[in-house]
Every structure is written in structure tokens, then in C-alpha cells.
Length: 179
Image 1 (cartoon, one colour):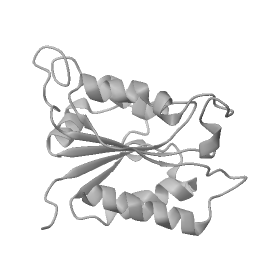
Image 2: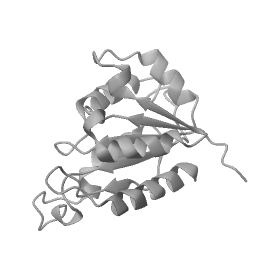
Image 3: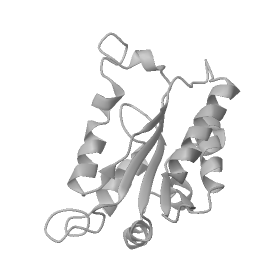
């Protein structure tokens, strides 16, 4: 039975034209019939977010995937601004704020450091699960069900991932979007 759930991919990469990983993942997502890929940096180069439009997009979809490169232990700046402005009190949380309750939220993240860099003995000292706690808390606050994150680690200009690794991750991404 085909998937009839609609997924919104909020793509937040400040330089997608130079991104091998996020561009490839966005291309995979665009091939899925039930997926809408919304490139925030293309839509809002001036960082002036149309909150009503974004809220309508969220309401029109059953699931949301935040796709972004992990930068300075967080999201890119436009995605953070989007979260601040779109997930408003009385709409996404707080009294009467149930618009997103029951929808699914997933993270599709790329990192420059390899997996072993994220842990007590790694350069970053914390695991990815620990570093993603603020986003997990956001999902909890707005009543969304958090799906298992898809994290592709260790891609950077000095040591790019092999094509086979990227292709395998893209396959997993497609499967997650189709689930």
C-alpha cells in the first residue's frame, strides 16, 4: 500500500550550491511524490519569514523533516529564526497551541566531524543525542512525535565522504521519507 502521508522537508543550507551532501539528499527527497521540499534560504534570502505561509505549509503536511548541516552545535541561523518566528505561542504551543500535535518530526543532519568526534573522548565532548536535546525539547513542547534522526557524519572539504557512503545514506533517507 503506497504512503499517503505528506512530508514537508524544511531544507536549511546557507550555501546549497556548494553542498554535495545536502544537495544530493534534497534531490532524493524531491523525487518522492508525497514530499514537498521547501528551501528556506531560497525562499527567504532576506531572512523575512512569511509566518502565515509557513504555518499553512505545516498544517498541510503530516510529517516534517528538518534537513540541515550541523553548524556550531546547532541549526543554521535561518532555521533557528524560522523556529523562533513560526512556532508561536497559541499556535504551536501554550494555551490553544495544538496545531502540530501528533505530527512527526525528523532531523536529517550532516556533520563535518566523524562519529567518533561526538562523545566524551571526542573533540566535541558530547554525543549527537546530547547535542540534539534542544531540538528534541522543541518537538516535545509542540506535541510532535520525534522520529529517529538520520545523521551523516564525517563529510568535510578536506576529507569528503566516498560516493558509496553518500549513496547508501541517500537510500536510507528515501526509505525514511517513504515510511
